Length: 334
Length: 281
Image (cartoon, rainbow over all chains, first blue to last red; front, side):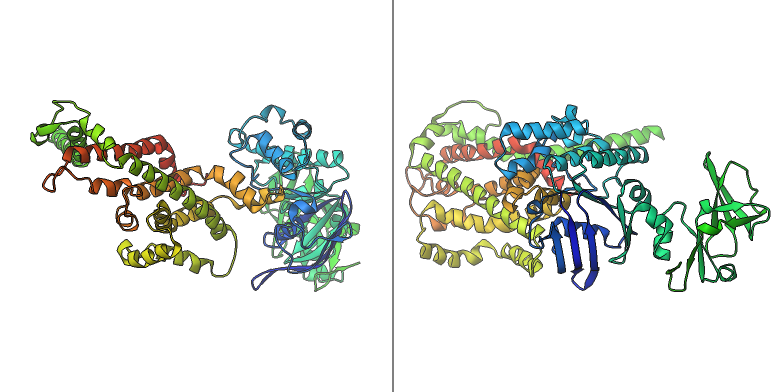
């Protein structure tokens, strides 16, 4: 329900500058994902928005009002932590009702209704009387999300909420968060992750951070199709985009050619030749790792299960219209 | 081979249990003998028996009828309880600041607090006496509460600070996001998680205040304001040549019972309290 605007926001811890001037707008009801390698400041940025950390300089606006000095609860945010951070001595019900009780002015009945409504949304109603230690990891994370929903926040913040869950649960909870966003489509959500799959699948827009600065902001497909730098190109997409430099790049009149594994075809008259190092067969498709004299092996996604012998030579061609050309500064040539 | 091995094992077992028995006897026998003596009457006192032979409550009756002993007992309970309550309140609030609020000179402050416990009682006795006179609380229970709290706080603050530092930061942050003030965080989120530490430090503070002698002797003068340890020391018999052993023993037993009861009640909590700092709870 709130549009968030950051104006030249900076944050330093002592002499270390973690956030070096971020300008960013998050629209009402948008699902924004902060993504980046560890240490890029994405969690710090989230904590600045939450109000748990003070901004060193710059301005933070919620719906056009400066909130720099407001406490988290005054900003109307709710946060889901990586480690769940449930109150261990309270039952699930008490955990979820705690914020409402502190707000004053809610009758017991009203609190109960809101807790139960949130519990129904997340299918944790049967656990309301249990203590957090009697729940599994996935259930705990749902309670943490439920606690946030109950308070009916204007802004919903997630700090790597899935990284403590195992792979299967992570996918299930990811889908649940996506559904939640659909149901609460007027609540602005900001989600921090280092997992680009989560970013791609959940986000309305992704904000790629690097070294305390915004590298690029855009929809998942914009970042995938039109990355603004080599860094973004390499970060978004799985497997990682291949970068080919040297003579092979000069042929395309640039210093580096970026081409995704899924945009290369293995064919006898391919323009590049490489030696097969390894093949990963995933069933539906397979990844062929080629040594083409580059720093890193080139990965080609290949439909079907043809088994290429390690050590054999194959020829590949990039799809011309899918090539990303970058200059020496790592910026795209379009 | 196996025979000698078993013999060695047996010897070790015997030695071990002999040692255990020796320790238990040395630790428990004096108290046992005190109980035994307290139930003896008249000249029985000076006959050496290791098993109860006669049973009389005369000593207990005279303890409670003689002088101000019941009053002294109440004084002790009052002083020790208020000391514990005051020390825990100050220590919990202080340790929240010391463990969770970043401010300049925090380490120095912690060290200073620890340094306070460096001075022996006797070194500060004269100075403290002047302070107590100045405050006008001489010869009242408040003098003792004041002195005991000062001496208990460094330990209490340190233990609780260490314990609170180990509580996950995220829980505090979750509470902040939920709109909790520091006071709400301390009372509704941290205190329930800190029961083991609170019980342990509280009990130790209670025992220290209950047993203390030097301050109690110095800061109180009348029978009405004394605490039990001093009262027992000053119990006198019919003449200056008579030491009323029976009554002293009865009083000692009475004084010990509350401590034993408290330790037994909170036993479980103490054990988990002493290890709780090591493992994240």
